[in-house]
Each structure stands twice: as C-alpha cells, then as structure tokens.
Amino acid sequence: MKMRSLTLIALTALAAVGAACGATSNGGTPTSTTPPTSPTPSTSIHDIQSGVISSNSTVTLSGIVVTGVKPGGNGIDFWAQDAGGGQYSGIYFFDKNNHTDLSIAVGDVVTVTGQYQEYYQAGSTFSLSEIVPSTMTIDSPGGGTPVASDVTTADLKNGVAEPWEGCLVNVTGSPAVTSLSLGFGEYGIGTEKIHVDKAIYDSFYPRIQDELVTKLVGLVDYGFKNFHVDPRSVDDITTNGTNTPMSTTMNGLLSSAPKSGQLVTVTNVTVSALAPYTTSGGAQEMSFWAQDGATASTSGGFSSGMYFNDVFHTNPAVVPGKTVSLTGKLIVFGTTTLAHEIDFGYQQSPTLTLGNGTVPTPAIVQVVRMKGAVAASYENQLIKVMDAGMKVQTVDATHHEYSFGTSATDFIWVGTFGGVMTDSGKVAGTTNIGSGQGPVYYDFGKYFIEPQAAGDVVVIP
Image (tube, rainbow, N blue to C red; front, side, top):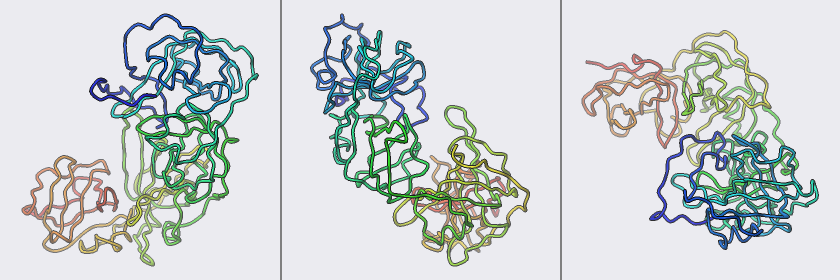
C-alpha cells in the first residue's frame, strides 16, 4: 500500500459499490494504464509492500502460502503471504481474468506471476495493493502453514496499519465490541473501533455490545477509507458473550435499556408506516415502523414503537394495519440521545410472518413535547402534532426538509424517509400549519415526523 498523492492521482468515481463494505478491488482504479513491464525474477511480497518494486510491474512470487480464499465477481480471489508472515508479508490477489486454480485452499504453497498494482477508491487516502494473476501453480497443496502475527487494535488504526495490509493477524488483548452501528454488516472492536468485516465470513449476527473478543484471527484489508479485519470462518473468532433472542414488546424492550446487538423476537406488532427505498443497484427495500397494538403508548416514559430496517432487501409485503412477527437485531445509535432500530432478514433468523390487524391511530401530541427526553418517549411511534399558531420555522431546500412549530424553540422537523416530499410551497415564518402526522424518527441530531401522504401535513390558508 502507498499513501495517496492527491496532486498526482485523479479520483475516479466507482461505477458500483460492493454490497459488503470490505469488498476489495473488483472494479478498481489502478494507478497507471502503462503496459506492464517484462517479468522480473522471483521476488517477495515484502519487497512489493515495502516499496522496492514499482507499481504496475509484472512480478513472479514463489513459495508463498495461501492465507485466505474468497470467490470474487469473476474468478477466485485470495490472499497469500511470504512464509513466516510478519509486516509487509501479505497481499491480495484479484483474479479478474479467472487464472486461479479452482482447487486453491488455505495452506497451499503457490507460485504466481501477475501484474502488481495499487487500487484506489474515490476519496481514500490510502490504496490497496493487489496482484492480478496471469498464471499460477499450486506447488504443494496444504504444504504451508499460514502464520498469524500478533497485533493489537492500536496496530490496526488508520495511519499505522499499512505494514499489516494483506497479512494474516491474530488480534490480542481481548478487545470489547464497541460499535454495532458502522453499517454494511461491520462492527467495531476496541477503543479504536477497528472494523471487523464480512468479506469472507460474516460474524456480525451474534455480536452484542461490550462482549470481549477473546480470539480474532483474520486478514487485514483496506476499503472505503478504513482498515478491516476479515475473519475467514467461525473458527477464527471466539467471544465471551451470549446472545439469546429476547421475546418482548417494544415498550418492554426499550424500558430494559438493552445493549446494541441484542437479538429480539417480536410477535404481532402492528405496522404503522412504511419507508420504501430503491438502492443504487436497483434492489427494493421495504423498511417500516411498527408498534405495540393499534394505539400509541409511552408507558413508563418509553416508546412502544420501533423502526424495522430491511437491510437485506427482502421487500416484505407489509402495509399499515398488518401485524408482523420476526426475529431481528437491535441496533442502538448515539451516546446521549439514542436512536433505535431492529434490522431483519438475517439468514440465521426465522422468516418474517404477517397477520391482519387494525391500522394504528396516531397519538395527538403538542409540538412543545417534541424535544428532549419527552420526544424520545415517542420515538418510532405514529403521532399527529396539533397545536394552535404553528408555522413553518425553517426550510432546508437541499434535503426537502422543513420544521414547523409555535416558536424557534418548539418545533418538529418533517422528513422524506417515508417516501413523500411535502416541502413544496413551504415558506419560513409564513406558511401556517394545522397539523402534521407521521412516525417519529431521530436522525442527524433532529426529531422528524415522516409523512406517508401529502395530506399528512395540513396547511391552513
């Protein structure tokens, strides 16, 4: 890997972003389009990663040991390192031309000839070193021992992890799981929140906040502006935590101060609103809000509603009034003001089931209650904000959002997460609002209602 020189290398936008945040260089942007140089005598990965070999050179590597295998978009991608491991000993092989032997396995000793290049993603400071094989030979099937070098989470921070890029490592010190809200099926460990990714093996589902990772072996990868550790199988990770699905109501869940990552089973919660979305790749999602029963409640000061995030694009046939039973994973965002969602669609979970219920009735709420701890008690519930003298307070035309209320301190924002834009014609200080209806959603430090139809915000002429 080389540090990026922004004055010499132009950023090229990616045509598509891999579903996994740790997706490596399929579709990458090499540093040069100059024809490869003539093959050089056999060299070492250490020489490549430490800068002895120039980018865009044709290299031959002999006696290297395969440390990880991952079917790619074209052929079979893999990682290998110099026998003995250590810093600068590993590198990623991008098999875009289908030259990897189909029988390749961890522990094989191989010889590879290919083009060494540095791959940059748009906006990244560092690059990913990779070799595109033109020929490869398995010299000794299973004849090598992949050596995992001991590191700490401090060794894997952005800015200091470069010597370990492409290497097999053993993360010592039993770091805690410190974040489950990184997105893309990644979680953070240690105070540095080092990303653990799913490029080869997905270990996200059972993770829970604060458990200790007593064993973590994996490959150090770089993508989307962060270094990652990619475990290769269930044998590469052990924790001291247990995560048994908690059967509960929404109000019971939130009043128990659950940890982020807790598996949750809900039964016959009532769908109150929808959040349809089409991904950049064209996949359809149908996330939704649901609550305990058809009437809003803040029993004990805790909400009875929840946002259910369709992270795996299952696009369930939910509509307001349907009841839903599912098992998912609670994700908690924030430190002071918390936001909650349940992600569903995991292969390890039972299939979502639907039933028939009653369309929920929104709770009538004064706008003065839409701030602080009181607003939090309505998070993800369907409400209707009604108050005398409400006007549009602020308009954010860039995001089609606006706020309305009785003053500059008592207001609620109106968002577009429900798939509806209602900002047209809204003028700050002028447009009178009779009421606004939608589920309450907390995002970017603000409380929103998310209308489901244009008529959910009533303008008084």
